[in-house]
Length: 499
Image (cartoon, rainbow, N blue to C red; front, side):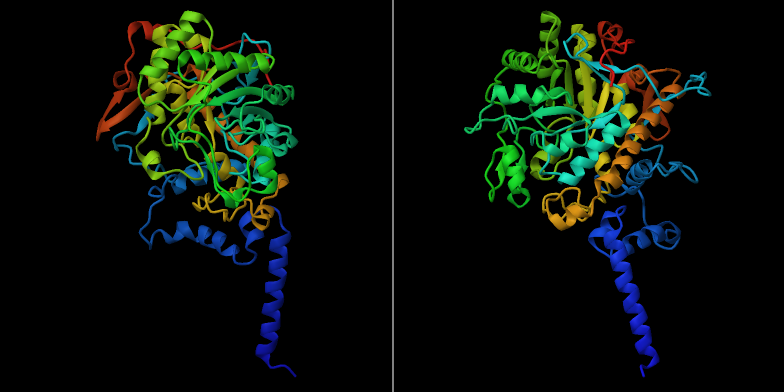
């Protein structure tokens, strides 16, 4: 007969086995699915965090690049939970650099208001314009950097929400298309997905790709915020046979992209390339993505657009605070302008040249909450691209393992066991929820400012804390000339190309 402790061991063992099987079979929590039983401790510690803060000195604002408050906002938004702030803000509202909105004494009446707004049209005068209904959409994240399940979940999520996703420079994979979401195809210097056997651009492959109705627009990647002036890197550990075939690169060695397009040497050749891709695509919107290092480049682009009454349909301004799976610290920390300053420079020069109504501006770089998106809009963006916020929606816990192929949540890895932890059918709705939550918050802020459309948010709606107890209007910190002040953005009131 077994002693009492033997029965205890049997019961405990049975509970462990049962718990392990339950964790492996469930589909909602990637950590528990990949690390059965032990993964439960993460959620236990997370739940114990708030009540223990009265005993343990800690802060929700110290982590980088995204603090706990920002991540919690994204998680709650993705789960469709109430995203309210208990007990007041934790921000130091006297800290220099904090941007505050100036609420209207007579906000836009919201009792019967919805989050619907007139679409923002990319390529309004092109043969195949695209109407964007959500202010924030998925930024470029390549298949390879992200797992196939992550890409599929994103595509399915943007389909549910009615938004779009950028492919990143790794090519358009079957998983981008399988989810059914609208796609902005990014063409990087390596021409992944549309290159020939010699690694050169293949016009026929590009033309055939753009015949797919899911491809709504094309973005030429000139540079990336996390590593301006350097091409992308995909570590060999993350290059599977499938990724090798999609990109047209060998396995078992790191995949390095060139740091520029060999066809583009100046403003004129850039515009020629934009026009070439637009023709090959059948008249779809074409723009480019760049990191600003000063004012000369964007000033010359603005002048070209004004003088020729043509040019890119959109310009994506990527801030130096942008993220990536792997980048040299020297470039990440010290190269390029931050998003806020870069947006102001781009907006000023486009207005000054009289080109602001001819091109849409997309902002990208460390925006994951509705307030951060609204600030970017007020500084000059018409749309915003978000990468890491959507990774949080997929379950990312900021483990900082993106470059190791050991991402514990299955988001940024090609390890088959870890990938299985991320179930697209369980995460797609979270992606959709997050996209809708961002849009809802931006519309709420717009109404608080007394306007009806996010593109009506301007610098005069905001101010910045410059020292404790003193704030200055952003129109003083980021002034414009009188000519630029009267050149405004255009909001298309028609529904052409609306998704």
